[in-house]
View 1 (cartoon, helix red, strand yellow):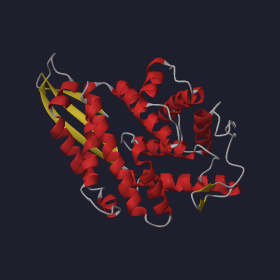
View 2: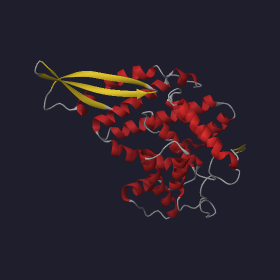
View 3: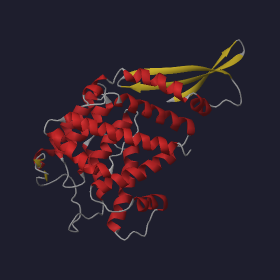
View 4: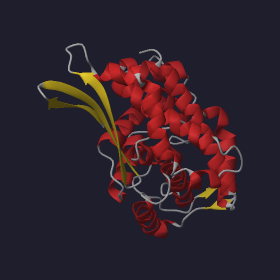
Length: 318
């Protein structure tokens, strides 16, 4: 959160730029004197004119929390700091350019296309964009068109109303799968799975244990949200969620949304897991289930890096 603060010093109005950063239970304040009050001054212009300095100062504060992230990587320990800086720059650019709504829309197009494609959707990227821009498309698979529309509603619910409880998890699944058909033209079942689901060669949580394990996972998140770095917290939550596999289908889509809610709650922008990395994503999850979590974290952080590069390119348009 940033704002301007004015002080009357000996009859002269001094203007200060202030940004408060709450991170892992700590509060950091950036306060900069910008000069005497002037009708031409704007907070937005100040941010853009001083983007590098403001971003570097925030990075110095957040870098002290990166040790755990670096320890969890199998290689390239400089990557977390690079991602941190990009995340900070994205936040400052959104604040300075006042284009968050438009950027969110562009991000949703890319996220929905990739997330649904990972799960087998064949609808092209341009048709996804058409649906989001106009509300419809001439694409002939109406089930996939409905899937995109549901994903838009789920993304909006995630941003505005999602809470870390069982009700919200069920709700986001319902929004994503409403009126959709699974393979074999079978409608998506309501609620948690009623039968055991095998993913690859791995068993998932038995149906009778799903609620208990989800409650344990949610409690783990609450207990650690100010102890474990948000990147690792989000990625580890996602890994554990996919092991539980609470629904018969739709677990990847719901899991990636909830992972992004964790990132957003900690001040990060959402990330995209790209369709061309689908096999690497599944392999990384499988290896992490077998005990090799470092390669999984490495993969996820690389996807975050790629996502933030995409967002920075989008921001160049504004």
